[in-house]
Amino acid sequence: MAFASLPWARTGELDVLAPAVVPAEASGQPDRGAEVAVYADADRIALSWPGGSTSTALPAAPFPDDRVRKLLEAVIDSTVLVEADVLAGAVRRAVPYAGAHGSVTLQLHDGELRVRGSDPQAGESEESVKATIDGNPVTKTFQARYLADALRAFSGRPVELRIQDGLRSTVLTSPTGVDGMELTYLVVPLRTNP
Picture 1 (cartoon, one colour):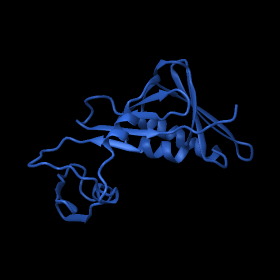
Picture 2 (cartoon, one colour):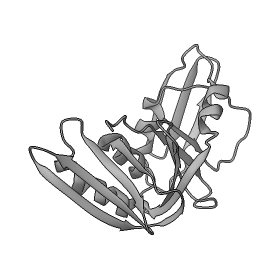
Picture 3 (cartoon, one colour):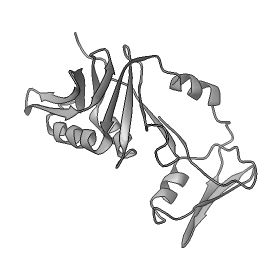
Picture 4 (cartoon, one colour):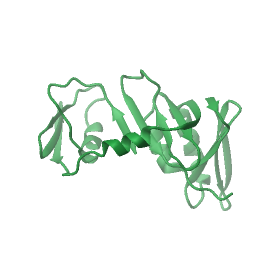
């Protein structure tokens, strides 16, 4: 799950739940610096930019704001600050060794983040990534594709991993003040056998 707050100039009130396909389609179309206008009424949403636009009907259900906010209220066990592209590269290199479940393991250890893949058929990989770590030394295993997808959103900037105890989600967020955008991803770790 992801949650983002973007800087924008608003000319009226907007409170809608839109299908993800609309902003996803729009995000790949305009130039990175282009402005995107958002239009909505009770039934439809539209986004337009120089040279294009997209629109769709709105779902009838309201945004589950309270439940999402509770998921974002994390009780942090450890915090890791790392360059997103560096960590994403290490995850990508571990994928060939991610096994049948496509899982990679992150282990916090003495100022570095170890990224491991292990598969009895393909072999093992381990790579250390320089990181700033605060908290307990923990080990978490994730589905590589979900972790890689979350890290892609932070490309070109640092990312903070807020790791919770047990199987509670790890919160990925950008440090405050980067690009005026607040972006948060939740990635749930996999249950591993003791």
